Image (tube, protein in one colour):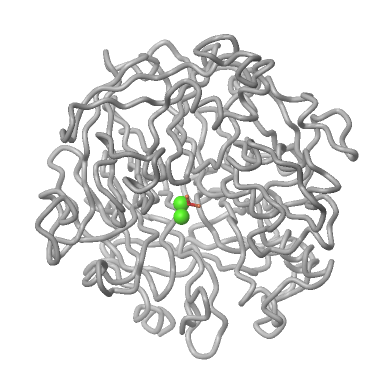
Amino acid sequence: EFRRVLFRSMTVPEGYQWHVLTSWGDPLLSGATPFDPLTRGSAVSQSLAMGDNNDGMSFFALGQDHGVIAVNNEYTNYEYLFAEGRCISIEHTRKAQAAHGVTVFEVRRKAGVWQAVPNAPLNRRITANTEMRLSGPAAGHAWLKTSSDPTGTLARGTFNNCANGRTPWGTYLTCEENFNGYFGTASALPDNAAFKRYGIGAKDAGYNWHPFDGRFDLGQNPNEPNRFGWVVEIDPMNPHSMPTKRTALGRFKHENAEVVLSADGRVVVYMGDDERGEHIYKFVSAKTIDPNNHAANRQLLDEGTLYVARFSAVDGKLSGQGEWLELTHGKNGLTPENGFKDQAEVLIHARLAATVVGATTMDRPEWIAAHPSRAEVYVTLTNNTDRGVKPNQPLNGPNPRVKNVYGQIVRWTPDQGQHTAPTFQWDIFVLAGNPTLHRDLMAGTPNINADNMFNSPDGLSFDKDGRLWIQTDGDYSNANAFAGMGNNQMLCANPTTGEIKRFMVGPVACEITGICFTPDQRTLFVGIQHPGEGRKPSHFPQGAQAVPRSSIVAISRNDGGVIGA
Ligand code: FEO
Ligand code: CA
Ligand code: CA
């Protein structure tokens, strides 16, 4: 009966079923109390419970029917977090900070159904206040030092953790995205080109932490924002381990971190920087993986070379070539005259360095996914209404549409089939669009039709069999340019034929984001983020008069088969 009620608010294909695995505020650690829909909890109860706005996640198997999931808690919606609808005290600030970060929790399959396990030994909350190490070339640099950390090596917390990655040595990567919006000040700020490029200014994005927590006041702590915008490595198997910010991977608004191994055993990490006109990056480790020494592998992300992508194309063609431009101090104009005294400065100001070397401006790079058995890499470029409008964002090959409201997926094949290669060939896998309204490029590529149209592709992941799963974070008005597209959704694509089919549709005013599978691929976990955002009518997932809550749902087939097969 429970499941039948739920079924009405989310749609999965015929022959599939779903249930809620866990929701924001569910008790997780010892001492936690059940979610209270009236108060929505306190700073303390939130720190012992599932965080809010679940985003990217990974599943780590512990046995046939046992695993641990690490999931990002990207941000929180004050209209639901607080009865007052805004942050007006230090208690509120601490509660909001505790709703952010990462949740690690054990799951078990009982009678065929996966369930979260409260109080399990590996359960852990990492929040905006958890101690973490800064490592790699920028650790200890003057720009990372603050009054509370004169060493520049010990940061506090992670937030706006968007998407994720997982390493072959069993750790979880969480990516700090719109970190800038948490900082503000009532003081006057000096003109600062780097602050401008990263969107850091006196006015925050509305979180309002800086009046109550001086760490977020730029007047008091101008270096604190330099300690965010990194990829953070977490060991989900050790709840006492200290998360580590890997500065070698560069500082920007990280979306995800797609990790692949090159033939020679070096680690390659593909990363998008999600903002209009920003770039796509690649890290290649200096050392190679040692399958017998996971401890040594944990240093691999501290030493290597960062690159940024330049795409080229004949005018009007939807395919072409590209190259990876090295972001190494002393090369490609990354010199003291241009504002870079050493490699730490190149990494902390990776965006500025990317501009100096001539990287291609992209339509908001979101997730990157590498094919499991072919050397092919796909990136969602979610949308960009500045394209063709702002002088620094002219039309170019992979970003071919003025005021691009729909987004596209671009793919590239590294030359020689090697992810370490300096050059690649690219094409457009799909231009999203609306063929019921348009006849030009805004209709989308031929693999878009009235039955599968969508906008703003964001989450992107391959399963082990090579199906490409696409999640959307777009305009769900179902009106004007977006007529006929409905709520945010998840689709499944065949990378060989280009065919794309809608798989599921989310509830009202949610984003579909976060995906992972059990190793048998018979259960698929998907994130339903901020259902009912902006007080749109939603009671997902409980129904009746309950507060809408971000949730992870588990999807399976009625016949127990492989998802999507
Ligand atoms: Fe958190 Fe770029 O999406
Ligand atoms: Ca996203
Ligand atoms: Ca998004």
